[in-house]
Structure formats: structure tokens, C-alpha cells
Length: 225
Image 1 (spheres, rainbow, N blue to C red):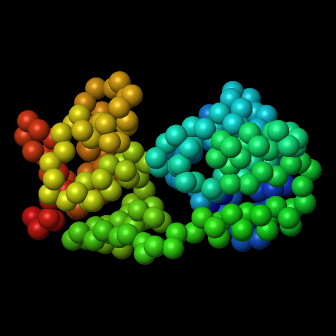
Image 2: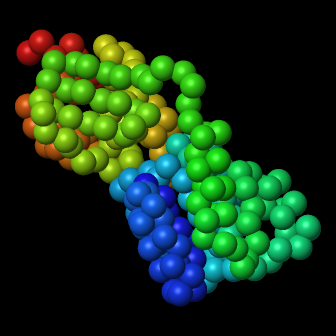
Image 3: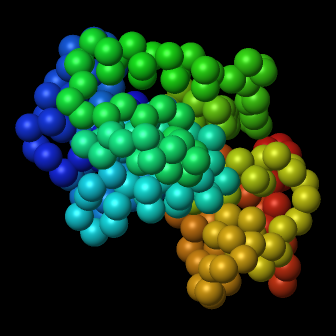
């Protein structure tokens, strides 16, 4: 999936149309707020990002992506009318993988996207977790119970992966808050309970794998019970 954040409707629609016609999945957003909302539901494989945007500029969006451990290596290509050498240096210094000034040709854009995706492709073996009927692939963001795919929010997915990675280890609520939401998160520990409850519900028969340790927190069991 490719996300394109661009407030110009004609450019956004043309790029999305072209991407889809070349066999790529793509979704466009006119405002950063809609983009961030989508990022909470599904991480894309690449982001196309304009600089001049309402609500917040593209450089600010890029900095936020690079500051989050979930998206710090997410491929980002800047597409912008600001094509001076200085603007390109600023974009690349902030962590952009490529910088394409407008106007640009569609075929050239497709070629640059494919090149960035090739460079970003992991060389190491994908990590997978199999526990009873539960299957999780963190790289591909796949969760299955039996043969059924399960849709999770990013926080639910990150919580599940953390518990699976440290199976049998008891995590306090505070520690989970720090790992999943970051040290700056000022919410209450009940946030963890709510997410665990939703995660258990979505996992169905595998929800019981997440065990409550009374007075402490949670751990991932062995799936035997």
C-alpha cells in the first residue's frame, strides 16, 4: 500500500490512478489529519509526501514519521513544487529517501518508487510467531487466527508483537505504556487494560493466550490452555 498526502485534488487523483493502473495499491489524502488517522489502522509500504499542506507542512510530517520507531525506516518520497537545491537538501536531511520536484512525469515517478522500494526491501529472513492457532508476521503486518485474518490497530498490533517476542515475561502496565505509547504518554494505565480487552476480543479463541497476572500486568502464555 502506498499513501499519497497531497492537497491538490487533480495531482492526487492522477497519481493514485496511475499507481493503481500499474498494479500498486494506493490511497490519497488531502489533509495530514486524515493521513495520521489512516496510519493508525495500517502502515503503508511507502509514503508520497507534498511539502505545502494545510494543518501542517510535509517536513513536519516527515520528522514525525522519523521520530516514531514504527515508521523511522518507512520509505518516503517528497513530491513538491519547491524544487530549489536548498529545499531538496532540507527534505533529504530530514530523512526523505528521494525528492522529486513538480512537475514530474508519471513513468519517471513509477520508476523512482520502484527503486526506493527495492532499496527498502529487507534482506534478512522475516520473523514469524506461531502460537497454537495464532499466526503473526510483524514484517507483513499479518495476524491470523486459524485461517481467518484479524484486523488490528497499530497499538494493538504492537502490543501483541511485544508480548509474543517476550513470551512468558510479565509486563507491568507502566512498562507496557512506556514500550507502546512512549515515555511522554500521559494517559492512565487503564489504557493498557482497554487495549488488552479489545485485543482479546479480536483474537477470539486465541485471546486467552494473553494472561492477566493479578496485581502486576500481562504476559503471553504458551497457548496450551
